[in-house]
Amino acid sequence: MYSQRGFLMPLAIFIIVAMGGFALTMARTASQSNTSAVQAMIAIQAFYAADSGAQWGMNQLFYDAGSPISRSSVDAKCVTLSGQSRSFNTDGLRNCRVELLCTLSSDPSNTISYYQITSASECGNEPIVSQRTVELSAFMK
Image (cartoon, rainbow, N blue to C red; front, side, top):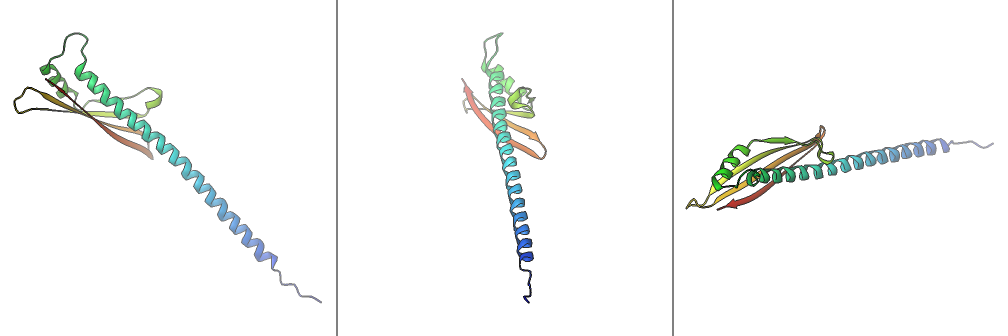
């Protein structure tokens, strides 16, 4: 008579454990890949929101359909522009918010005004949020 040792049972357990580990690794990789794609999209949205906010700020400074602009009026607009915030309702920038800061300086002879608009955006919802900052500069004689 032959004695059986049962070597297939440990082999079956090993295969089940190995396949379970492999399946778990694949599930984690797929989940991380999906999260990375969402983070990349929200980062792009945040950049475009910051850029749109900066361009909107420049428009507020230098465009006035009712009257020609002057250096003193643009200086005053820069002061009022600081601290303003905007939220977007367009499809590509939904859930994005922008805060603006306008910094005014002039040359030593006070003949040129320099404007720096800083647009800081935040897009997304917890737990995935992205922030971007864009700065634009201009001057007026």
